[in-house]
Image (cartoon, rainbow, N blue to C red; front, side, top):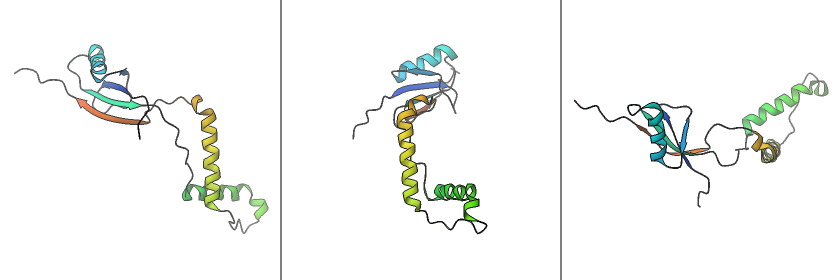
Length: 134
């Protein structure tokens, strides 16, 4: 299957970079941009990355559904009495319904969420400056 996401080269000064300030269409251009700003003798981290792709919306699984059901029982404690809730809720169908609701929400509102991270990376490397002549 073809990967139709838009990939861009990113780089910044340092070995363990958390944010990348420089971006360009090619690896060579992004390295040159860092060197122009930071000098030729710096360590550079380079990565090809994309910010494209859907939000992952399968947020609910068996463990998190247990938390949802426990919260449901807590906020409805007057209804269930001191013995609590005896749990006649189908975990799988509740998880599916909540995941579908999240997918619908993020499809409609995902563009409103500013994201500064990559959804995928490839070709990551650290470039060290050439050794100084002896």
